[in-house]
Image (cartoon, rainbow, N blue to C red; front, side, top):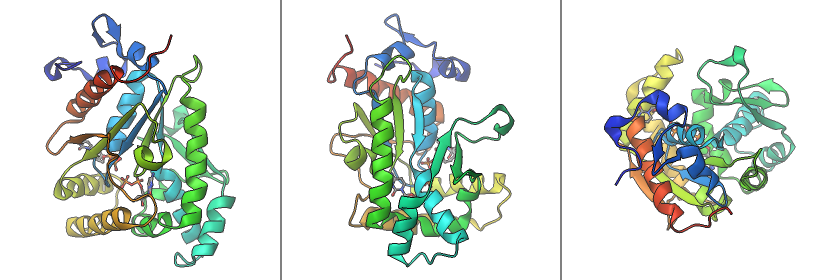
Length: 275
Ligand code: CDP
Ligand code: CDP
C-alpha cells in the first residue's frame, strides 16, 4: 500500500511535509533513517533532481545535486582555455577549484535549486550551457577529477548524514552515488525514463532558458553522454545491486515522489532506527 495515495496528493501538502501515515508526518519518517542519506542515480533528464529535491523538502533534508560539480569543472576548463583533452591540466584544475553550493537568496529565486559558485562567481546557469553538456562526460571520466569530486561529496554526505538536530539528513543525486560515493546510504533509487521522453524534457527545459536547439540534436547529445557515462572505467553509471528502480516515463513528478516515499517506507523495515 502506498504511503500516499496519488489521488490524494496536493503539491502544497507535499511541500509542507504535512502528509501523515499511521499518525506520522514525512518529516518524522526522515528523522528515523540512519544514516540519514538517500542516494539517487540515473541518466540525463530522467527526473532524478526533481524527485530528489521534492523528497529532500518533504523530509527536511539537504538536497545535493553532485552533477553541478562536474559541470563546474568543465565550465572552468572551457572558460580558462584549458583543452578538455589535457587530462593532467583538467585534473589539477578540479583539485584547485573552489566550488561552493548554497541555498538561493530571495533575490535569486529564478528556478534554481541551489546557487553554484566557482571561485566566488555565480555560475548556476552558465554550467547548463550546451557546450558544457557536450564536454562534461569526458571531464568526469578523468581519475583526478573523480578523486577530487568524490572526496568533497563524501565529506558533505558524512557531515549531513548523521541526522543531528541541526543537520537533519541529505539527498544526493548523481551517477555513482549509490555505487561509489555513499554505498551505505539508507535508500538507493535508480530513476530512468525512455531516451525519447528524457530528450523531450531536456529540449523543453532548454527552450524555456531561451536556448534554441533542434530536438534531434538534444536526443543525439544525450545518448552520447549516457553512453560515455555508462561505459567509462571509473564509477560508471549503473544501478546499485540494492537500488529501487523507478521508471517514470509518462509519469508525473507527484507520482514519482509517491514511489520514492513508498520505497523509503519499505526500507525503514531494514535499516536502523534512531533511538
Ligand atoms: O542534469 P543531467 O542529468 O543532464 O546531468 P548532471 O546530473 O548535471 O551531470 C552532468 C554530468 O556529470 C554527467 O553526464 C556525468 O558525466 C557527470 N556526473 C558524474 O560523473 N557523476 C556524478 N555523481 C554526477 C554527474
Ligand atoms: O536531474 P535530471 O537531469 O535527471 O532531470 P530533472 O532535472 O529532474 O528533470 C528534467 C526535466 O524533466 C525538468 O524540466 C523536469 O521538470 C522534467 N520532468 C518531467 O517533465 N516529468 C517528470 N516526471 C520529472 C521531470
